[in-house]
Amino acid sequence: MFSLSGRVALVTGAGSGIGAAIAHALAGAGAHVIATDRDASTAASTADAIRTHGGSAEHLTLDVVSEDACADAARSVAASRGALDVLVNNAGLGHVGTMLTTEGADLDRLYAVNVRGVFNVTKVFLPGMLERGRGSIVNIASVGAVVGIRDRVAYCTTKAAVAGLTRSMALDHAAAGIRVNCICPARVQTPFVEARLREYPDPERAYRDMCSTQAVGRMGRPEEVAAAALYLACDEAAFVTGSALMIDGGWQ
Image 1 (cartoon, rainbow, N blue to C red):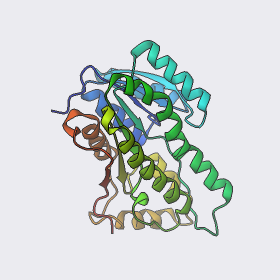
Image 2 (cartoon, rainbow, N blue to C red):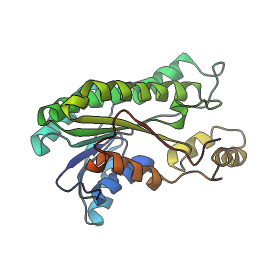
Image 3 (cartoon, helix red, strand yellow):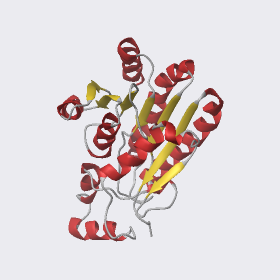
Image 4 (cartoon, rainbow, N blue to C red):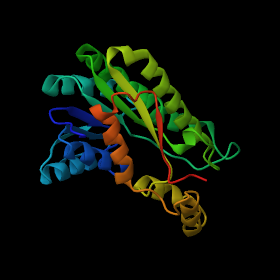
């Protein structure tokens, strides 16, 4: 079960946190993983670590905001590996703020990465999947796509858009053999969340508060989200598409 032997997977934002954990999980299941990140050094570190543990991986510098960069990446992957079997859209940004404290520029910045980035990357890799007649796309949304989170107006707005994009693509391409799902994690202890904590006047109190919003009393671990991504990537999830899988520790 849960084998990706002979499959090719690309993960955006794979330099750290959830993206790196997903890259390792897919490689552990036998996939050749293309770890991408805007920061070439972190993408390379993830690919190096996978190879050190006996997996197959390479890295690619990719800024998901750039349509040209995405097109170049698709051409590079097609030339070396052919069409993708698995695409994980993980790259994302966060922001702390209410409607009154969030500027339009903040929303635009998050939208460019969290929504348009998913659109840009999927746009260039989906045709190859359609030509092959199979593929799994996993988008990383957030619990904030489904429920409200205080002080996260821009973040929740963009992640709700990711969930909507997921459902629409799933319906459009299900008959062609393409599955599209998203994962909605609650708080997961990553460099991404740690950066958000530093935006608070009292980071220690904010950390305790963030842990308390999960009924289990802690934040999640990147590996717990990666396990869900692996399931959705594999043939065992062949009857799952258009879903928003909550990995939330009992959000309350």
